[in-house]
Length: 306
Image (cartoon, rainbow, N blue to C red; front, side, top):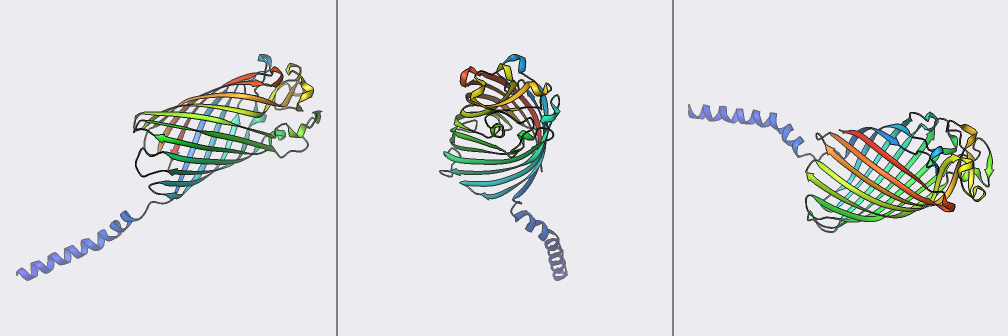
């Protein structure tokens, strides 16, 4: 009798083992290196053309939609390497000719100097973006944004980083509508600029992150406004900018400028898959020959990760 009970228990345990084995195996499998996300945000621009005079300023609202995939190529105690590819569309409300679509690829690498949570780190981020505009061919082309930073997580709530940024943009249209105004009209949107930045982050709760960033940039800027409002016009590359409602009255200029950019924002995790972001940017610039301008940009968005 005892032997029959023992045999029965063995059979039950064996059956349970066969049923649970797939679950135990799947639990020990490493997570997939691929993840997906979808983002929708609304952006308000106070001076989207970066015009130097109040009469040429145009404010507008842009809706940004993107869906992308990320590949976590490396992730260990001290290193992270990831690549994200995301097609996108930007719909501009009051200046529809500025609506555009394209695809962005973002390569990010971070190296920590130690395995402890507060170890300092160095990070690099390179983003390539190709975009086509609905009815503003002069803006068609691609851009590269690169960032190098060093930082440190001082405690679970506070971190800081400093570094440098570089922006490079090329227009692929060699014969823009409207023709040559001053010098080389096809070079207006061929710009590059660079400069240092620092960023402070504070997390009052594990799911809430507040940040402040200051960035100084110097170099080329493409600015649009009424041609009569730019100082020393003959010194710049220029082309007619038909994306603005006044058409022939508006001109895009490539000028040199020193920009001070301030950013304040909050990232809020709602669930493991859902996050909200609010950002306020203020830009003030000193352009050559007193072509100065400013712009305030407010962005609110939601991201779903899966």
